[in-house]
Length: 263
Image (cartoon, rainbow, N blue to C red):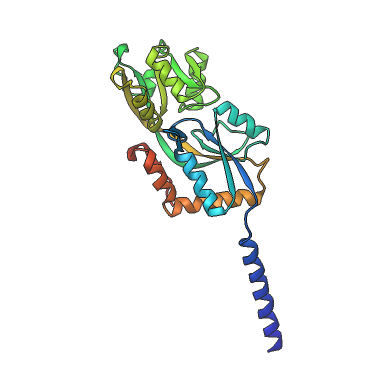
């Protein structure tokens, strides 16, 4: 009986210590990079918002840790993570952009849309149909695949058909001015800038029915310990499972433009 009592006391003490450790305030401050475009990052009427901001704040609430968010162009974000000056990046539209720099964790698949000028008097039926038109130039976000596959982008670069801009707004401004004939980007981002720049009347948007773009977050193995990685991934999975992420996405994404991961 005495031995059994001692055994129970040891188990209780261990459990109590573990619980206490789990309730300790988080002293970690995570440096979070945000893609500097809608709907990931929005600055409207002096207020910050967007998917990236809302995800970061929800993670802070759940973990008790501090999250400092800063928006970056894609080249700047990749550079900071490579230098070990960034923990997380929300959100990347390609699993290829941060290769050998960070680890990409997919969250959902986004529909992509080809937006091209009506003045071309073309009636493209697919993205491939556009690619076959060798005279057409496209806007591509510098340091990013935009929504192109690596193979598509390699072909466009080899043919000298790409013109760079630092962000999607720059791409759609080039389209509006006629400097490029088309832009391929996620449907949600495309719709935002088509509306913001008032180019609906001069452009045609062709949703791609075949290829989806993976969208997710990236974490740095250089700055983050295995325990910190597990903390972030566990809470992101919980936000997926309980519907929190879907609720955040739904504020900024049209229902048909995104496919959520199944659990």
